[in-house]
Image (cartoon, rainbow, N blue to C red; front, side):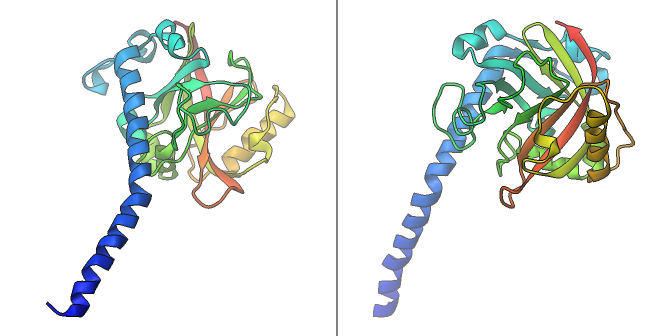
Amino acid sequence: MSRKRKLLIPAALVLIGLSLWNILPDYLDKRVSSKTYQNLREDYTEVPAGDDAEKKEDWWLTDVLIQFDELKKQNPDIVAWIRSDDPESTGVDYPVLYSGDNEKYLRRDLYGEEHIAGSIFLEGLNQPDFTDYYTIIYGHNMNDGSMFGGLKKYKEKEFWEENQYFTLYTEDMAYRYRIFACQEAANGGDVYKIGYEPGEEYQALINGMVNASLINTGILPDSSQKMMTLSTCTGNGYSRRFAVHAVCVDAQKT
């Protein structure tokens, strides 16, 4: 082996070491965070098994159990659980936390531990009892599809056709939502304002969501209905966010 090649090997090993030093902490952090939420699902939720086609029409209400009493012992800031009909496809199956601000759970899990993935959390200006007509829930756009990283799949209409519904569970209610639009919305724009009530301004917001949508679902809600936006990063800076909009199509006591 030449002297030059002998020198290159240690240099390459140093570069590999530096790369691992930069990458490994993030990888381990995401893995720990993922395990935390998987444990929560296994310990505090019960969901129907088997082929989705065999589920009865209201399975989302009768067959899904969220143990809020036990969850709130872990953290009283847990106000809901959000679950898509097919979490394997969307990745959406998480507790929703509320602190009254948009910072506390940005990079912390429900135990207060710092993690890149943070938590799924409710907009600080929203009411934690979900009485608002318009609600925003935030989650990070993780590369592995966790948190709200799977939302970007809604850019494809074929994906939306197979994954139109999700349910928000609280201690005493189950809110059934149907996704009707998705867009790259301006950070700080009308989509990120809170306090809408039935009427022209709220309807203008809804119309704008439909007109700006990256897919045409053929659904146009009206301002008498409650709406929810699931918001995450676009991956292209902070001026715009990727927003998935849904209309509440049913609400039942659990």
